[in-house]
Image 1 (cartoon, helix red, strand yellow):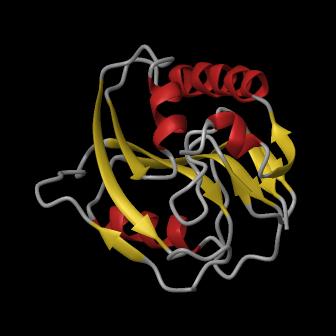
Image 2: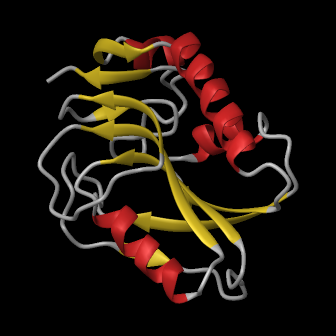
Length: 180
């Protein structure tokens, strides 16, 4: 059985500490709360990678909201996007006329954010904005930019704080780079 200490030893380095992540999430929450003041928010949260980000962010936002989760993946166990996205769309979700905020852990190629944003626009929301914890600075295969961003990072594969490599490392309280 591998402990968190054991998982930390698999990191080449810590990119973002728990304290840095939580401080930035509080700032993002304050901005989102101000931007949506007086409105009900419909949050679409991408799982599993965004689990910790979504949980911590939404507990900081004092607005009425409903939460819809969906599964989306383009990595399929690799350290690079496959270029093909798999989406598990919720059966009874209604987005027409709603103020929708799409949350994801990381903006990488732009494929996931673009595909899901396009699908949500078909549902005719009143508004649609996106928020990501990490924006990976790289050439994108799909044009995408978040309305809210936690951190810009270099083009490196990261784990921790919900993000995984082959199902491991999600429970790390920080974000780091794996040893080669």
